[in-house]
Image (cartoon, rainbow, N blue to C red; front, side, top):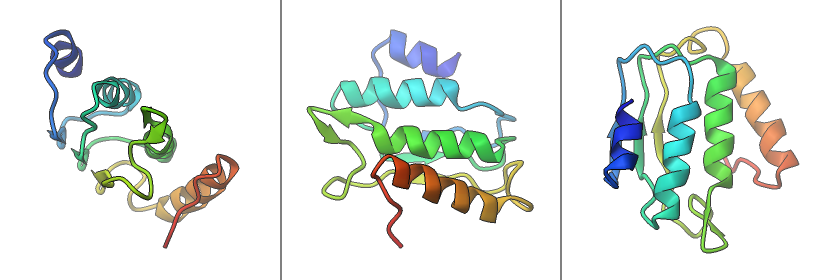
Length: 117
């Protein structure tokens, strides 16, 4: 609802803090990131800690962010400012951090956007 209101009012943000909100889906967040990138002002800092995001949701969010483009260039690419993403203390945190890394590595390699360590 908040993100929908921001889009409706044409409000862009550089920092989006949605921590401690019991969120378990990233669908609306991804839509907001894409919308804002289309405006030429990608979100630079996204804080989603202390929610209920599972490993698949975090993976989907990172993959979606890696694919967001503006003017035929990746918004969060090698030559662009990175997205500062905080997703600690979510549902995946204690038991699936390694699984998340494996899933991300595989999916991003498929998309030719490999993780750089």
